[in-house]
Image (cartoon, rainbow, N blue to C red):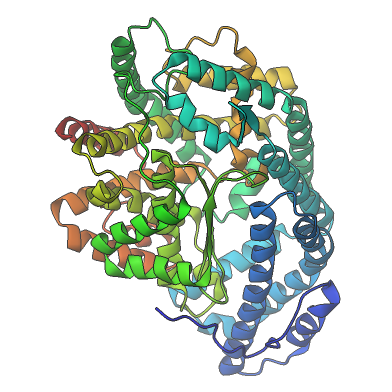
Length: 568
């Protein structure tokens, strides 16, 4: 599909943002503009939306370029300039625009659900605005960038070759236990060098975030963040109920799977370098050689699921909106970054030839499809959907694509292994999501805790949601600091339980597809196309599933996964 940026109606086509003064006149114009009719109000909203999209996209490219190469000084400087110099100066005029919008008498004439949700988000932003928090939020973003730089520099040298953590991971699946042990110990030793740095950063983040919360009138950062994230459809108790249900229904099933694997190994307990290896001594799956091959394979797979999906990836490929291979200096993780003005997102990941990389690619591809389906919605706010919806798109795509994975795995044995590993990984991830989320609740409910207390809580949660089948003797610090790998804790606090909620929804989409594939995909597309013009429950219902994380639903879902595993 051919995509060109729509002509701007307000912002100069050739605008280059180098400093606050470059965008200041647009804020002044919007603030001074008289709104004397409903049509004038709608036009004003469109201009405001365009300004928001331009700023978001400018920031996006700075972040993308910085994460692609954390050692690039010019990219680093460009990102920091936006975060520390431009963004803080946007806060006050943005709040003034929100108040002008909120006070308009014509607002009451726009009563559709899309605008109701938009106006509710505006009211929340006004409620939370606090001038004292502007420099604190900037500092928080800068510390998150420092975290990415530290993690991106964590390289090891194995057999004369420098490897990233992602590239090293394949050796933890090697049938030779000595290889796994050697590489694991190299990783542990390298990460050990950064323990204190990351603890320092996290301590600073906790203090800053607590100050942000108290400045805004909240008892703790958790309560502040729930409102800031527009969590209108569930509350803190729902999260606690989710934790309990995962502990009750999912943990026992995963422990049973891991015990069977342990029995095949013939070990009393795993060592931390054993859990990813195949108990039958098979080599790790290697579905592709490089990022280009992975992309081409995924386009082929998406074409079999729905031709629209593959067209999205082809467009991104033509536009150069992907950076897939793991390399030195690259920030950790993977993401799909929406670009609200042009409408074509950017996929970033650290592919190193593993089966896990396939999951990441189709996951981010699901996010990308979501961006395409919503790119023509009227306002930027409508395209900025909650994570519970965004992750439904990506996690459903993992499962919808699974039927066609023979493109990645040409042997029947490898194909079955890949499917089995993925379903088992879902059973593993759900307790991990509960662990990370419960950890965050405790951290911000107890902001003055010591590092020792933090470690003790982490170990307590490990016992609650873990299998107890790993012997950490000799690697205690690797266990104690294992949460350092979760970038969400450092960069996007409280954004993680969405993976758990969305995984349940995605399994529902997959269940529908097993019964009626074309019908399930049409509902999936219909739900995603809504963007954030409806509430979460309505979006899920349109996609053919329920927004339900009750104990009974989690029990039913767990039984379905076990049933499907038995069929492989």
